[in-house]
Amino acid sequence: MRIGSGYDVHKLVEGRKLIIGGVHVPHETGLLGHSDADVLVHAVMDSILGALALGDIGKHFPDTDEKYRGADSIKLLEFVYNLIKDKGYVIGNIDCTIIAQSPKMAPHIQNMRENICKALNTDINNINVKATTEEGLGFTGSKLGIAAQSICLLVKVDN
Image (cartoon, rainbow, N blue to C red; front, side, top):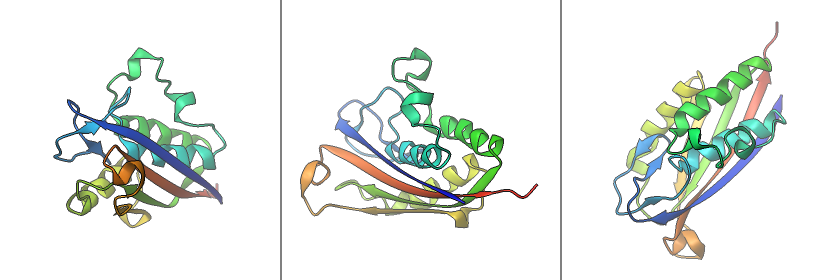
């Protein structure tokens, strides 16, 4: 078994859609980034890449590469899934936390879980997503950005 952790943060700005976990979450601001800035999926990818000792998403999807401008992070997660398969592992489980003062994430969490489990070809019971606020503290509490954390367990497939 191998474990990895991931963390990502993006600034909230006007004029962008808010995409989290592959879900368009209605909000007056969205996350700034080279791709769709899906903070949750980025944290998930980093936790998987960490478990595989394959660096981070910046190594695989650099923000200097125009082909990733506006990229759908769920599609990038599908690429990461192929790395898991190539290394002979499967998802044991993934546990994630979205840190945002607003908007409320609860109505969207089931769809986020479904998107992530589909991209990773795993059972939905292997994917947990939860959300919290920081009670008005820090940059997330001040509604300046959104962060996400992820931890993943990969299990070696017996051949």
